[in-house]
Amino acid sequence: MRKVRQQTMAGGLSVLGLMLLWTQPASAHVQKGEAVGLLTGFLHPLAGMDHVLAMVAVGLWGAQLGSPGIWLLPVAFPLVMAMGAMLGLVGMRLPGIEYGIAASAILLGAAVMFELRPPLAVAAILVGFFAIFHGHAHGTELPPGQNALLYSMGFVMATGCLHAVGVGIGTVHRWPWGQTLLRFAGAVVAVGGVFFMWKALP
Amino acid sequence: MKNLATSHLPVYATVACAVVLCPAPAHAHLNSMGMGPIFDGIAHFLMSPEDLVPVLALALWTGLRGASYGRRALFVLPGAWLLGGLLGLIASATNGSAVLSSIWFLLLGGLLVVNAKLSLHVTTALAALLGLYHGYLNGTGMGASGSTAVALLGLVFAVFVLVALAAAFVVSLRAQWARIAVRVAGSWIAASGLLLLGWAARKG
Image (tube, rainbow over all chains, first blue to last red; front, side):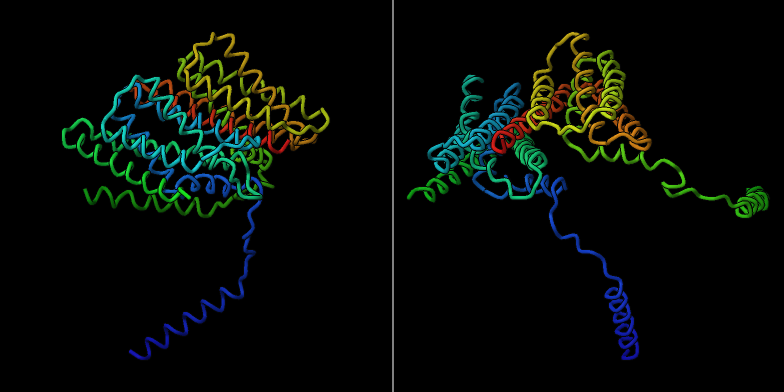
């Protein structure tokens, strides 16, 4: 048994020695145009729970509303969000961004919780209004040295995927227990919004 | 059955030996094949989202409009790209404008998301314009030499293949939700264009 251990140790040391002798460049620096911009943009909206809750709630609400709301809301949100980001990029200030984001989680969560069915235009305007806050908060945060286009694409794709998660969960709406579950999920989103509003208050 | 199988074994072995005894150069390296620039062109297109995404948007949109639209884009876009590229090769170097790139994203993403019912002539003109503009930019960026013209061919080939695959895929879609998912992709493209426009405005 001891001999086997010694042999394993010798083998391991030999491999380690070979690895040390066979050095490769680390390539650890981010360069413009690399896919890391896409990854950074994709991970950015996932990093904040306030954004995640609101974006999933858009998908949940769309699923409750059914066609055409199920696809109209997730289409409206990224477009208006990008407009919000553009406002930030050109230097236009937006007051109370954190309050707007927290309010979006509260109101969208409440809409899911009470299964509100306003006219589609009203729902789209509400979702679009809050999307401006989310876009303004996120869109302007491009880390230095990264490709703006790839970052933007990753950012938009992640937002769309969060809506898709909401729509996917919302497919349980066809069953009575699923409707109850969605209302509960809406309540969770609204409570999360209240928490973030409380945190945002001075 | 077993005898039949074993009786073929010497034949297979002889063929295998003959193949092994007649080695030929593998030509596995791009230098010896002469295909290097072709792959450069293909890789350039696949690694450049500012080229790739508008082409994808056009292919998805024409696919949604039907087979005749997809077919028109399939031939007009690569043709115009090649023409623009050749013009660019003999022109002086020009830098692409981020604003114009973002406008292509917005325009084609917008057309896709609303599934715009434009005529075949307008669609053809759009495909030609897109091809000429991006081909010209690619051409000026490459500079004039024998291998860059070959790289341009590789790039045009990649455009052709992408349009063929994406448009044919969308034409074949019958489920309503799948066609809507394609239009949602258009909203993502348009939103990316808006963001790019914002970055360009800030930089400018």
